[in-house]
Length: 63
Image (cartoon, rainbow, N blue to C red; front, side, top):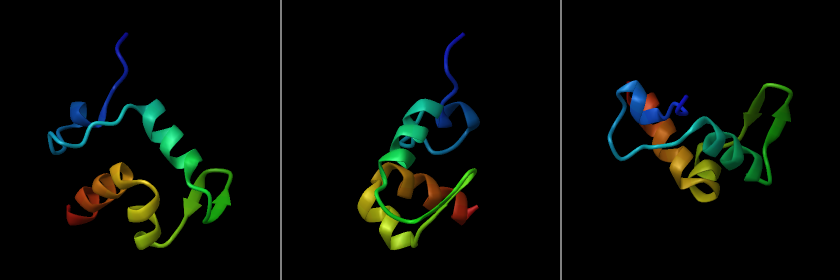
């Protein structure tokens, strides 16, 4: 079974992350408040640490 990507969920065509890529990108961010099911960090920190996640967050925030 192929892995689902953000593209499969009708988001912008330039945003493509598999679940594994998303998890790896989150795990690589060296700062923020980590909880068992969440990572909190300032939006500007996301842009600097993980541009691909920043693009995804921007798209989701814009609705």
